[in-house]
Image (cartoon, rainbow, N blue to C red; front, side, top):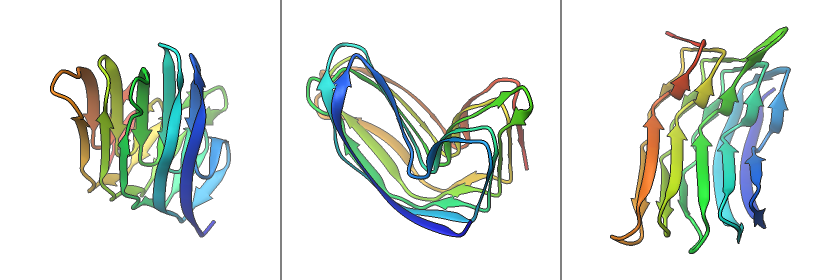
Length: 178
């Protein structure tokens, strides 16, 4: 409770792999209350291979617990490494707000206010950006996104697909309410 976080990612071990980054925890089964994320910096995210996935959660990776009264005001401006084939996802609060037996993720009274910009340098990359969660199978209530979500390309010949949402890119069997 009552945490203030700055977070830096520097990882060069991608080699046909999948990774999750989050400043507080990869998995939450408890209660997180009044967390403020002020800064997220990706100084290096690199590697090799044609099948890499990197997900960055603004506060946690996968939420099965409760996140409440928290804010991500971090500005993120990340340019993907040249020649890195990558599926990249960023969400302001939790990558996945999930449910499973005896656990239902809840995001309540949480806000993303910082602008997020992802720039790709190679063709056929995929980018997901969301203010609260990329995938919601739990409950998101009284959440908001005042930040701008942007993707760009360093070249006119780069192709990429992108999915962007103020709250959740996808809500499958989840609840979104005010």
